[in-house]
Amino acid sequence: MSIEWIAADWGTSHLRVWAMQGGNVLDQAQSDKGMGKLPKDGFQNALLELIDDWLGDAPVDVVACGMVGARQGWVEAPYSAVPTAPVPETPIRVPNTDPRIRAFVVPGLKQAAPPDVMRGEETQIAGFLSGRKNWDGVICLPGTHTKWVQVSADEVVSFRTFMTGEMFSLLSEQSVLRHSVSDGWDQDAFAEATADTLSKPEQMAARLFGLRASDLLNADDPGAARARLSGYLIGAELAATRPYWLGQQIAIIGADNLSKIYAHALKQQGAFAEIANNTQATLEGLRQARNRTRQTA
Image (cartoon, rainbow, N blue to C red; front, side, top):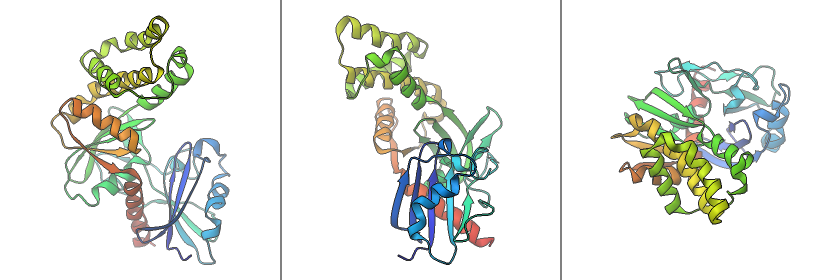
């Protein structure tokens, strides 16, 4: 297999890599060796475990985005301040790598007020915007830490991060609600909970305990309770971000199922969102970053 370069999405929990020829995927691999599980000297070995069979004698460019560029990562890739293009700088070269690779890390973005940062999402935004010149609107990137990003004239103008996904995980797995929430889904329960928190966000903490109380008193369906928990949290997020998305063009870039959940919640409020493929956006953003490294080589 003759590859031109390797794309890598390296987050806190997982590493995904793709063998690339231009913009085409020839092969792919993944592992659970994210930034949070590796010592400072463990990144190269974690990468080589996945890509060793793709390598030959000539050095191949590896372009990575995500938490691999954090202070605790393989190499620190300093943040670029907004407003700015999503990927305004040439990726940072990783020193002293295996001679078969030249590794680069895409810098993240930062915002001074209110304080905020992102790593990885900037690459997805760049990929999304690549085929949409002068796209103006708001991009939602749902996940563990959901981002709401204002875009205008091909620049990230501002953004806010919400720990909704992490809160859902903590509440459903480590709080008293773990006894009442399990797999399953009830779309009507989700819609009702979302609307309730959107209209009365100050009641959310009480609504959350109500999930446990209702289970004890009424033996509620745990799948419906899971949907309500998600609805309460996402409803509070949408209430807080209403100034971002109200009356705006909206796009969602994330895992397919979670993107659909956010799209349904927005549709309830009369806001319609385009769902973009997150892998395609990531790969296109990394391809653009790779082009920058070639221009300065």
